[in-house]
Image 1 (tube, rainbow, N blue to C red):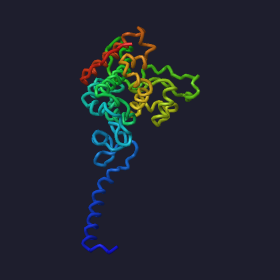
Image 2 (image 1 turned 120 degrees about the vertical axis):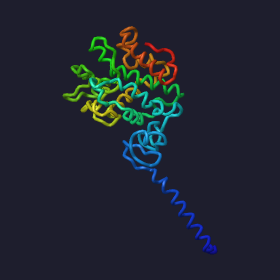
Image 3 (image 1 turned 120 degrees about the horizontal axis):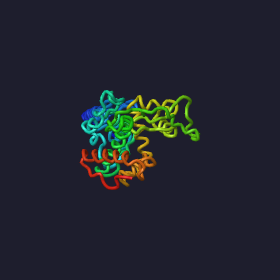
Image 4 (image 1 turned 90 degrees about the vertical axis):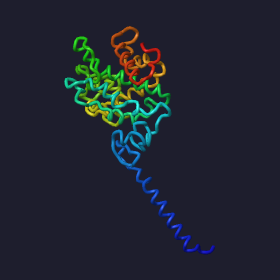
Length: 291
């Protein structure tokens, strides 16, 4: 084959240079972030809306995108759980509340959601909104419920508590040998859904990446871990019953104590929360609200 003319070589070299230049920014977008950080659409590492929101390429993206793999349909959790929606719930906890110090944050919630891309996805936009409303209805009840009990029937303050008030019970099931209790540790309720018992802390810690049996206090010390623990419980026990209605989620969380007429006031508080949040999100709450 004859050698190509010099002009052809020049054109080829120029084309190669342009191709490399074009590849540069794309390569730069492979952030190489730590697993706990998001790679933004512009190729930078960090947390928060600018990094984990729209266009997030990898890490704990709010929509479950990037390396996490998102669900289909349903929409982006971060676009539904806006600052106004989230802060409207948690801002009720004043300085007299354990959670009033700003422990529960939207960023922590959305960072945790990035580890559970099937949460509030896979169905219609209304399905997503109903699951989000249900999650926050239970979380608001669990973190405010004890205030109503201990302060003689006063209205609960949502997201007031990080840990259960009554810490006398160690919530250790010694018959559960798969998840044996660690000496000196108590497994009372902590976090948005007040996860309890050694048989929950053990597998939750294993799934999330903390020592659930040896250091259950991690759920009360790190807001992202707190929300991850709540979402771990939700995805393993509640998520799949959402199509049956909100009442089925009450049964899954606390049915033995609240359903079938056992404690109607507690059940009704959860239902009222759910209806309120559905209204705020502009979605019909559906049927079968009670248990």
